[in-house]
Length: 199
Image (cartoon, rainbow, N blue to C red; front, side, top):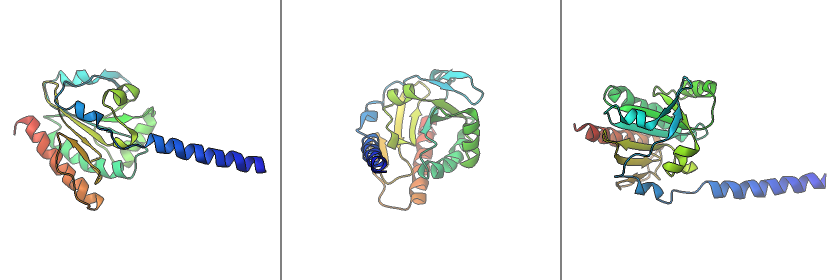
């Protein structure tokens, strides 16, 4: 019995230290991406077809990517339904991609889209996207706005949180409730998309 107690304590300590090392605030690597050309990566669409980010850049429209994770609730699950409003408003002028950073199955994607709910097309990506866009676990949702010429215009990290980061830098939100922060972030993103469209 004592042996099981020791094993349990070891796992608790090890698990806590691992979690601490995994959940770090952004070190700012993403700042180097704004103003530079997009970085391509592979994705799998909802039909199981392999596509590349460059396939969407070629279409001559701005691209808005929201990187997200199923395990990042409640923040992501509160933000994405509001993000749908931007998709519905601009989907004819802008290519929207909801890139799920996961090795989820098609069934899990379908269930998540229904639960959230999420109207935006979902694409699965993993290591390549994470490494190229310098995404840490705590960064999601992580939004990238790309101009029609393929240059990254802006990045917004954690738009549902008072720890929101942006590059180029913007004033940070004061302490507000999450719904107010999300509304403010959606308003900012709306203005950024209009800028991409030259409106």
